[in-house]
Image (tube, rainbow, N blue to C red; front, side, top):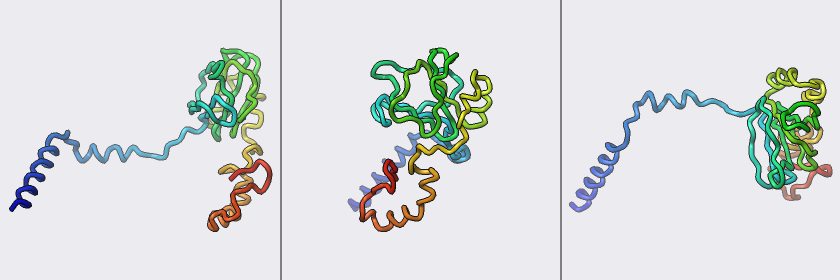
Length: 188
């Protein structure tokens, strides 16, 4: 009898709570799942205040906007554009005139040259349209579509694809010999 009473009270409590919750029609509940799709932001850039992508870091969306670089402790020490985009570093804070460097994936982990402003452009089509509007277009696009040897074994690199089978064997045996690069400076 006590169990039945406790069960009835629990059910009444949960039904009362359910009544207080806002009503969400079935169509609305499934509507959000219709909007789900694969997302990504090709051409975004990862910027950090310390070398080797450490310190305070954040992602910046690709944009045609000119962004003024941080100064002092907030100055970028590592800049890494995502695949499909590139960043142009400018001496002038308005992104005009002298272009210091053009960075593309995977970017530069240390030794970032002194610059005043940065413009990071998105996917190749958008980057090409915008770069055509920039001065020194040839310099801005130099090497954007070429493979980048600096990736040195990172996911998606050509060197990683060449040793994929060997990496799979290493993963299956639990890295019994440790995780050592086949070549200096190569990481898995």
